[in-house]
Image (cartoon, rainbow over all chains, first blue to last red; front, top):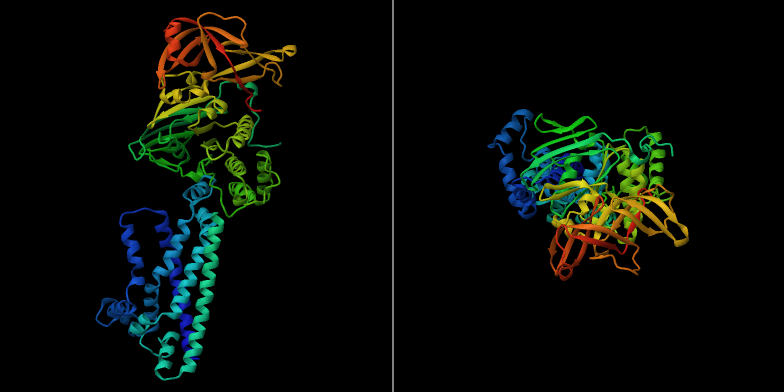
Length: 222
Length: 378
């Protein structure tokens, strides 16, 4: 078991969840509650990372993070090191790749709230902020938790994009998924097996949590 | 119950109530609207019309949930909305109570929690006691800790009413509150609304497409057609307007009269009611003399005769004069007859109109087979 890779993966997953949570909450609610022109286009754009092969996403991110892109140059000017093949670059890539996993369940969660329930909050004297905290958040909560769990689990297991953008620098960009690949290449099946089983168990737990929560949504609406 | 919000109203509503709410709204679409009316305290007004006429839009405008292109809403001297002056008070700062058609209870809160959520103006300690009082008022004591999913349709409606009353509303808006309920439940909830209206000092606006609700609950009717008010008056006058298609369609509801109980003939098990149409006999009622009542005469239960016949089972025979005759589909005619101060409607076969030679101005005897009497607030 490569503990360094495991810890790095957990750090990356927590970082991704922390960055995406506010974004997903805002964007998911906006998509659920408002109709605007180009909404279909925005939704398609959000779903794009689900369809594209990770190597394609990784390739474009690598180009965007590289020394010849404005983003890469700006990052290097501020921090003194390259964005590509760094933990920061990996985190940014992970955030972008996980956008659909974070936003879509949150959107579904807010969509499940009847518009009249939200209006009833306002008519009952609750300010928009109170309606959000006391009515919308508790009702959309299962969707929000689902989004966070999915994002966390998906980040732990992400392989293609991480390999393209991060390379495999121990302690910096070598995540557990990369470590498994490494061990298999080195014919160290025992280590690969332990790490693969760890990821398998974590994924099953994550699915169990999200399933339980989505059933709770169904019950509450019934 | 000691209750600051639910002020006992002056008896018999003798003094003229002040105008509390005035609404003007104008919009092109999606729901065209061009309306203006004002409501008085303590009165139930019905906004009556077919679905799609814009009834709910009017309620949503008053509550601030919808902003028409131009609107002016003034409640109790406070301007809630004046598009010309750029004034818009958001819904949560308007003192309105709104009972939604689907009740829109907060599904994650108990009945008590739903009512307490609307009591944000009180301190935490007062909130629960007040919410319990309100739930007791709508006869839900004992169900405080049920969630909406565990309540029946009628119980949900009561929670919604209690929640709407929690804010001490300056106007109470009811959006088709009975449409999702079956008949038996409705009947008991009508009584509930009537008893609440007797305790409430604010105007009540009821949106409905069911004339029976109008006849039962409303003092005044605003008939809405394609976003415009095509008739506005007290329920008796409007119910006699056979020229309005929607009223004609609701003909079974018949004419509504305000009546006073003037005499009890105990040995014949009858009561005598004084109405604008003259004296009417009704079955014995359990109410003291002088009680104000509401009498509904279904137009199918009105028979017209050229002369007063003898030896009839019918108690009520009134002399009147035909005002107008309108034909309806199915060889049926709607005959409006002026009787005393009132206008009664009769639904008869067109053939009968021919045989009796009925026409405007013609004297006629109106025989009333049945009268439905309700006591408001009971």
